[in-house]
Image (cartoon, rainbow, N blue to C red):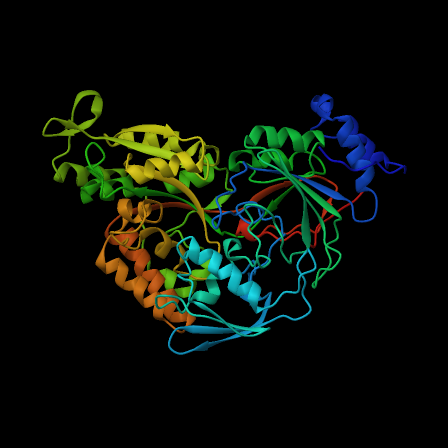
Length: 541
């Protein structure tokens, strides 16, 4: 609970109406407004004020060297990276003021001076070395560093050399998991960053409270305090917003977005396309999950699903039909080369007929006595964000003779545990482009894994990697020196996945949807939710 003392000052009539539930859309929920919330509103009317945000589940990792508390997935703005990602997917300076490429595979960074960590420790190159070595101890991450990759040149100059060719290092460093932490600190134990907010309290699976950092080097935050309340259930978040229990909520369900906009002064914060909904097909599975090895089945799946109907009907227009899983803003003109598939159930049936899958009992196809039954695993990042898409796809596949079993996993950990063992045919994912590298997602998810890699880092490749043709495009991406060359390589990789091998079935490019109470001002939804900034946000009376 909040430990703030309520200030003795008047509450405006509008705020009183919110508190008592007499506002539009909140009357039936008046009983949910607590004494605590009343005190909270009084304090918010002070200079700065507090924002209370209803976030999704607490999905922070807590293991040493891999801990992401305060960073990812809910970015509390405690930590900062060397660079930042703009809403247009451009890279801008943050803790690094400038950088240059040094042949053959090194980047030299000039660091910002006059920056301090929340404990007063000066920010220097040593903090970068410490932070990169922490990533190295966890396997090097997507940037590919080891304990020898980071070299301190002087207090404000540092060089980073990945262990493999990676000319997109700068575009990757913005990701929150690559944040700079105070030297000799470990986020699994204590969170000390350079960001505009510092930690006040973390209660696992309940709340995360941060306060404005007076010594921040950049634009000072307008809020004095933010409380992120973890609310895994979407309906609970909606009710909390309507009642005035929270001021803002994350991840409004796409099918509920119109409900927000009918609640008087409440509004919907909508980002550009930065996330996606897609199905991945397990092409390396073992019985009984080996049907994805049949290319005809994969292609039939791609033609059997009406993506436009999902966008317009299931999600009420709160998404865009997409041919790829990479946002248009980052792929550029190269994305036009990706064809994708249109809804054509007759073609899907013809493909299955030609492959020997003939209609059988109950209309479900069979071949050599084996029914065409697939299992879809729904659960990344959680099962609720996909609803009600899985049931819609289930019905459409039945129309072409495919039986689909749906398995809802409760959280990412359960989903990934099942992926590691390969127990599934289709995998429903709501992913996101979280850095400035167009090849980030295809490289991360579909590059052929090292046979000796640990199971966690290899689980996606072991299920979905299409092989040498795809890997060649990723290799081009890693070594390319121009953004145009990177975009072309990323598009080539997408063509292999989507147009040639049908390993990925993109359903839609999706927006970040936030529900905003009438007292929230200055909020801009970032298409990469994990890069959300809170310095411009304020609350009013």
